[in-house]
Length: 113
Length: 114
Image (cartoon, rainbow over all chains, first blue to last red; front, side, top):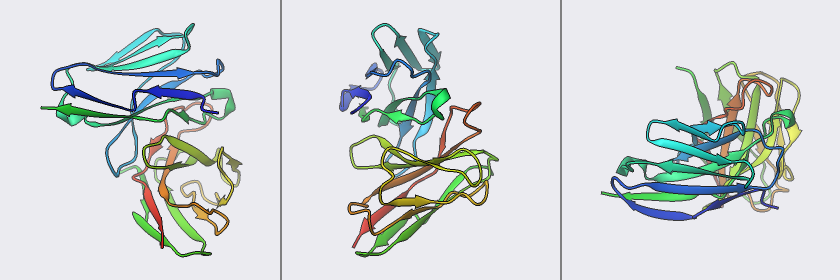
């Protein structure tokens, strides 16, 4: 049973455009929602994270929007750059359950110059 | 230079062979994790350890084993019981289970079956 569903699987955006990736979760006990960025052949790196008591968090060109009632959260990449081309994973965890991360399936983003 | 190191970068396994993947961290983190990543898919948790000499099964532990004899080391053994071992294996660590949700990942080991 996939507890975190991510969409789309891939997207292409022009340089300067906005990339939007969506995730939906089922387990209402999740209390930590990070996004990871992964380049080919490398390990994932934490990009930005949010807790459910906040509806939005922004760090530079990256913004997480969180909708607790809909059990959805999304990543917005503003002013997308070719260097942003990577695979992005959303994840969720429960602090009381050992902080084990449950990952979405990933979104491959290609930013065209 | 702190971080997580994994070795080797590539590993080849023959039928019926056990292989061990190394994971070392010098971040002084208590918690360590092993994930498996298949092409085009997300990461799935194999095993995790909160403290030395303690570890728990994740979602896909069958065919794998781990040990945690030292704080900085968390090796993963892929046994012959794992029938489909070809994947990218990622090790991660966090400060501890209670205080640190952020997991930091190593560069990964790609395991291939001959």
